[in-house]
Each structure stands twice: as C-alpha cells, then as structure tokens.
Length: 96
Image (cartoon, rainbow, N blue to C red; front, side, top):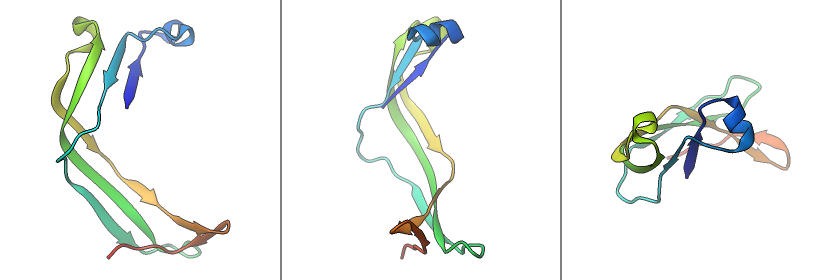
C-alpha cells in the first residue's frame, strides 16, 4: 500500500507528491477484533471490525525533514462496520 502526501493543492493537481509512505506485506501482526452488533430495525445484525494493529513497518520516500523517516512503529486503529447483502438486499451476518 502507498500513501501519498502533497505540499499543496497545486502539487497534488500536478501529481507531484512530497512524500510516499510504502507499507509492504507483513506477517505476525495481530489484533483485529470482530464484534457482533444487533442491527437497529429495520437494519439486520452486522459486524464491527476493530483493528488495533501495532508495529507496522513502513518506508518513506521523500525529504526526511519534511516527511520523516521510515520505521516499524506504524499503527492501524479505528472501527469499520461490515454489513451483509444478498441479491441487493440487506441480510444479517455474525461471527462465532
């Protein structure tokens, strides 16, 4: 995965990133929680994905003064809702 950072809108429009952060495939990273959530009618049950992944290695291409340097201290946190559908309609999903 690559994340591009631009100094300003003009550089963004021109496709000239100041920094490129690259996260390559990694093994051994853990901690993504899955939580069953009751749907609020008329919505069916869904799953909340709760990542809390640490020690993600990444590389930085760009000015160290502006972009920093790479390392192995990246994190991924947040919440995401996963909903099920079948033939265009909402269906309940869960994990066990």
